[in-house]
Image 1 (cartoon, one colour):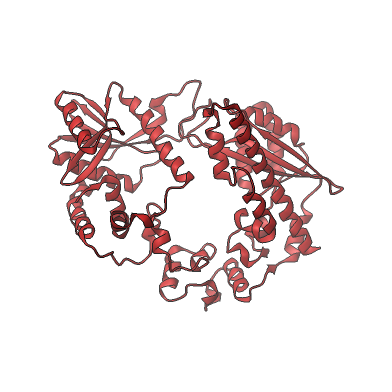
Image 2 (cartoon, helix red, strand yellow):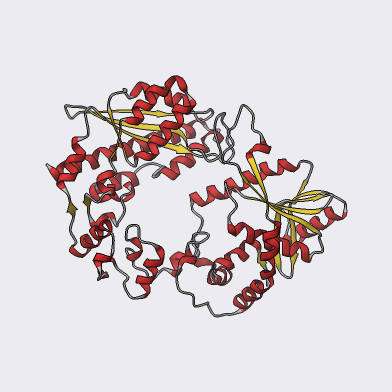
Length: 491
């Protein structure tokens, strides 16, 4: 058996997914742009963590076979090197690469680096198989440790690596868990060596601790819109219903056992009709005053904060769009997009208070996000705080009528996310998003801006900036069209 540490973790989650990885890799879903960003972030965090142990040597990730990496690691250890990055070992077919292997006066220490803000149980499993393999290679392991990101750290003028990371000694927990490693490996070996695909039903393991790459394959018999799409249903209950034969929402018999919100969705599906509370929607519309400022921010995150006053994974706004609906029914559009080579926050905040007066109604979709961004800006820039908080306090949430199921149509599929509400009410907008050049959703916008400073070609940078502006503008125009549909339904 040849198995890597990541495959070991895969087997712990679901041994069927491990078998598919070994025998039917073509059924796995390739990593998307979001997952690639996670991988890239993890690599960057790992590089910075190595600076905590300066003077070490690195086993090259590319250009060497695993056998050569193992041999090079052994050579460095024999030569007395005290710190090795990506130290590579194999033991009875199990391959591990240790992020940081350090020899102290007490013995060898394992340090696994995670781009997370906490120590998760799966990290202990990760460390336990490393301990098992290194111990099998005859190394005296003094401790196993997890290095993770300190999300309470606020960057000053210079990045302080020692404050950016937290350490947790997990040796005792790892020592306990590692006793189970041989039995798991024996089970994995029997599974992998079998030509028969394991018969394992879908379940909570499909999501925990990670979303499985095999879901498109294993969930092929689950209807596209199923009991799992019932709003706020607990996974345990959804699987219980599914296994009992209730696969579709309109198969549900005991409707009264569900919440009022869920009953709205169920009845709408059974009747194939919209459910509209005109009185509640009218009350929401009556709270809006004009001119009405439709606002949407775009943000990105940095695991390693590059700007003073920023924390790891803090939402950093770099762009906004505003569609103003005037009293006479006419519209104006305002926008901002930060420069890619500097901190965009102050320039954005200054422009925002220029564009939005203190005493107007601001409309956002899922206002908690916009309010959080504005509160953060107000804390950073005291000279703008009063005006920013006035904007904050005047925000209304366009999501409210949909979140409270005052307006529900089957096309929303139980969700009040703009991702479902907008195409359900304004289907022509979905086509408009598809026709955008290059950037079609918030994730793509975030990735485009985060890497924009790396692009040297001026024309390419200008093209991406244009695409960012077009995308964000369409977001607030979508809000305008959704509000228009609400008015029509009660008019």
